[in-house]
Length: 274
Image 1: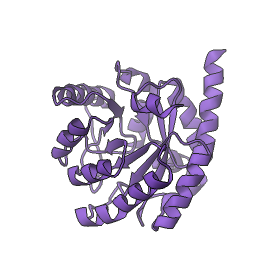
Image 2: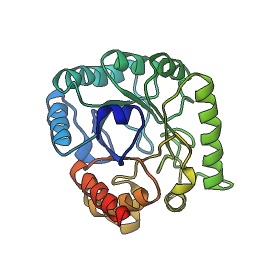
Image 3: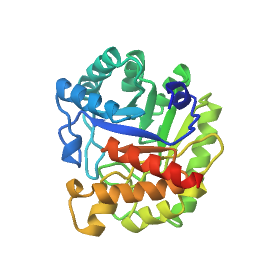
Image 4: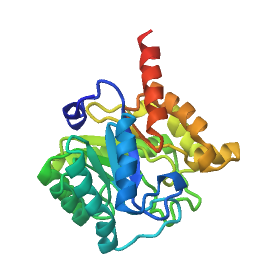
């Protein structure tokens, strides 16, 4: 897929977003890249395997995680963005942050997409930054914050509640001049295991015109807890759920394992043509 297609949200086929966590405490040990050299090495591998987007995150959002300082997040993220853009100028770089300051610095260093787990709720100034630079903005549904989001989350109707949230946010973002919007229903972010499976079953409900859907279910607890395994053992389960997500209309898969995800995309594209 051409970079311009991705940045114009013209997904001729689903895209694969490789996860690059420059953190010491992400839930999956295989995605922790604490040094610049390790981050470069991991990025090169993901790009060689066909990653369409590299998503850089400097703060863990696993259940129970607390916030780090802006200074610490900047120290982790910005040098990686700078170096990756220098080494791989054609790579599409996304930055996973809810902070306006980090988003602005990352964009100045070449970041192409902002991925905000809070949909502007934790730092409303990030909306102005994205609008100013007119780059794609990924917004996610999250009930609560990582510190408390899995403390018995409750919904009147999980599908209806998230859909209302998405329509409200999309209207607001458009009113602020943001034109390129990607929606993430937020698997595992303030949802029970059953909520997550209802969400996956009804993912096609979230097909909103001109707003592609991103799915992040890679190695998450909705998989490994059901199977009573570990995140490290959940690649097969991840691939199975990725196939379902693609059938239900997902346009971006956010993944730890690029090669396997690309294979799922290729097979599902073949399946849908026949």
